[in-house]
Image 1 (cartoon, helix red, strand yellow):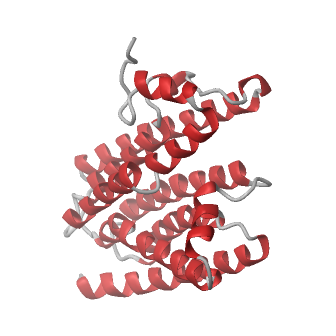
Image 2 (image 1 turned 180 degrees about the horizontal axis):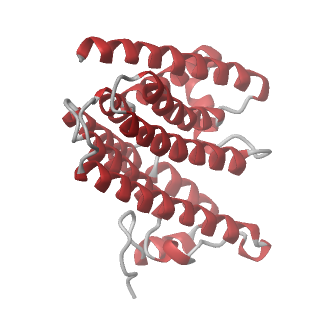
Length: 261
């Protein structure tokens, strides 16, 4: 099993490296590093499809891997692309340009490749499941599929609600409180995390599946402490001020919950 896993992981490493290098080369022309987010999400989908295509596991299980990872990863990649198309570089990356100073192209190359490394780690659920030859697909795996469907639907709904809100010129400078955004300041992040919980649940039915537990833990860390909520809320406070401070006071940061009075 471990020899097969190593061979698949090597193909995965070559794939994500090629994608991230191409994204880095593209950003040199546009001077917009936001393409790394599109590439990161696309790599998740590509890894799921690659492992499912090359893995020796049960065909139905591999099909589920390809569908779950492929649909979720490409949906997110397209959403990020559509949201940022024609827009200035995200404030996070503009800040990095100022902080990093000289040799910025080389520093961004290592940053892009590091994101590819994260893709490989997060691809563990797809890898172990694609190696599993046992039949039939277990109830635990079907539970993972069901949770995935709920999570993807919730994330897509949150994204659509925010898009509709931003499309109305009367809402400029205001904070979205529509739909799921009434119950969480970041429902899109919450449901994205549930997607990774679903992948881990699915993978737990396979040998070595316990390794997949690192994925939702890692995603939660990044969402709560690094590139998710902290960066998003810092930007929101700059652009919306007291309106967003009131939103912070009344609305759960992550897990959807009833708003405070």
